[in-house]
Amino acid sequence: MNFDEARAQFPILEHTAYLNAGSMGPLARATVEAMVEQERSDLRGRGMQPYYEQMRSLRGTVRAGIARTIGVPPENVALTSSTTEGCNIVAAGLRLRPDDEIVTSDTEHFGLLGALNASGAQVRVARVRGIPAERALESILAEVTPKTRLIALSHISWQTGNALPVEEIQEATDVPILVDGAQSVGAVAVEAARFDFYTASGQKWLCGPDATGGLYVRDPESLHVASPTFFSQDGYDDDGTFTPKAGAARFDGGWIPPASLAGLDAALGTVPHWAAHHAAELAARCWTRLADRFQVVTAPGQATLVSFVPEGDPAAVSARLGEQGIVIRDMPGTDWVRVSCGWWTSDGDVDRLLDAL
Ligand SMILES: Cc1ncc(COP(=O)(O)O)c(C=O)c1O
Image 1 (tube, helix red, strand yellow):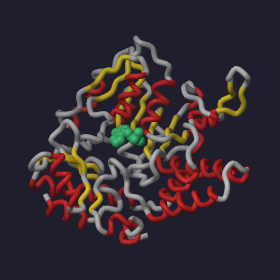
Image 2 (cartoon, rainbow, N blue to C red; image 1 turned 180 degrees about the vertical axis):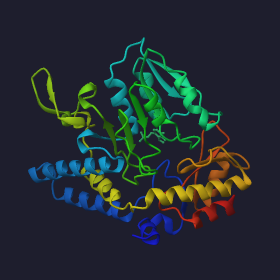
Image 3 (cartoon, rainbow, N blue to C red; image 1 turned 90 degrees about the horizontal axis):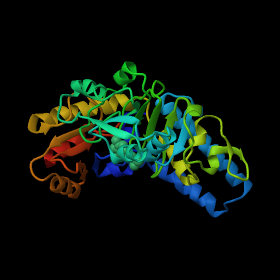
């Protein structure tokens, strides 16, 4: 599949410079068609044996697809509705106590932070915003103490667009690490197997339907099933005691609509082999062109998000660009806007952005 063919999969790109996959990825025609086809099949009847069989088979296909995308075995992937759900599964499953500590950073999304806070442990926040990206490692490790039970960080900051040093941290400590992959899975090449836990959002860079995602768990038996669902068990007693499913399937969230499963499966099939390479090159070119004219927040050579300080109020700038068919987003609580470059993004999209700015 060449670039023009890959891009033509997304109808929105015919008229819009869509640069906001960090919030939600563009939908491919094939993705929506798969969802519609599944809904049509549901019209003919739900709740019969073939329907359940197909649903179970789709769950297996999607689990395998997510696993392939992040380089891990399917048995270690749970199906979730979001990165937020994945973070909650981990933070609650560790059964932390008030004198335990979790280390995180000051550039995290509430999808991670809320789960850490609800765990009941103390949350220590390392400063990484406003310091050079190469000093983040030192700053995060300085918060680790003998009481640290989890280090929880995003792979790519949703605010600054900078990569956090998750590999170096994993090498430097024995503390379990949870990586929030909302801004990395589907954006950059991910090898999650080295981490203890790694989340994925389906609706962002994987261009999947809403409320889809996955969670990698390296050692499923060592994590408590804090929010069991029907899909978690292979048998249970009258009092709810249950035999957990083998592997990470025991952490599966509840029912996922078959149309969403079919859509995510189709979305995973739209990704060309050169996706990560193209997205990185495009983001680098976008960074250089923005840096010629604006103060760019993102350090050079990061991932696929570029945050910068526009002229004028960020919310007004993103609204004005939106009216011209250029979709970016402003970052709440900052004077920044954020541009997302995906494997479908063209230099023409970036031209339109720069012209409109
Ligand atoms: C870094 C990060 N973590 C978590 C989330 C929440 O993702 P989800 O909606 O899949 O829970 C986001 C959403 O933007 C994000 O950027």
